[in-house]
Length: 318
Image 1 (cartoon, rainbow, N blue to C red):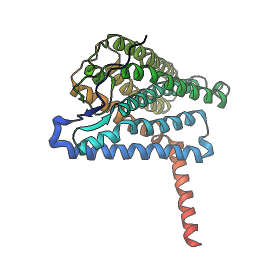
Image 2: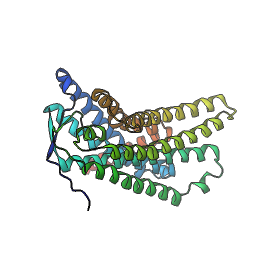
Image 3: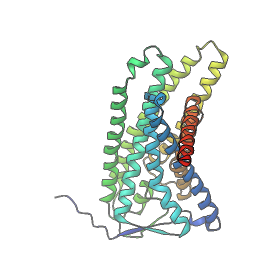
């Protein structure tokens, strides 16, 4: 007979950045600005890609899905963080906490798979440009995106299920700004050894494999770039790939440091700082790095804006 969840805790209190009380207003303004820029940037990408026929290619299809994901990924944690900064010690029910944990893991895992697929797409485009249209056709692109989402959905179930079946007898104060795995395991009054080991193995399977696949793609890309005869061509491609790799490294590096370790007991303040990078910073950097530095995309933005302005002018005229 399976053991039942005997938790007496019905809600948790998120402490957030309670040690920075004098900075609460400033932090609220900074995080609110970043959140608004993140949502705006990613919505712009989704809109422009859907409206410009020239951007209906595998690369921009991946980017559109990444932007859609980033909107929900950052919205899973940041609004609650903002509410916490306005009212110290934000309360969240047990079921809402488990739901937030599930969506955080699900969306985070999906992003890992999408980043690996995007790196593979760039590898094919740069290393096999003549065969690229045949290798990365629309059907394959759709299947890769579907696999990323479906695998992410499945990945989120096990950690959230195992955490929800732990016993929480009190205290109920989570020293974090969202319901994350390490602080929840620290609060449990039952043995978390099996849960820790299982989550570490799952983290290695998802984070490390996706990271090394992504890194491997960029290694081949760099080796191909080095064979480009034009110095300006090498510099331009290196600049783009270097920016992509920097964001990927920040995302995977911070995630791996948090979840791929047998005993996740870093100091809570260090946990929060690391978490800010992959929940707040990278969702803002992705639209900047992957699109706003792209010449074709910027031209598409100008084209869509011009069309909108002309449409508005015609509407006013009539």
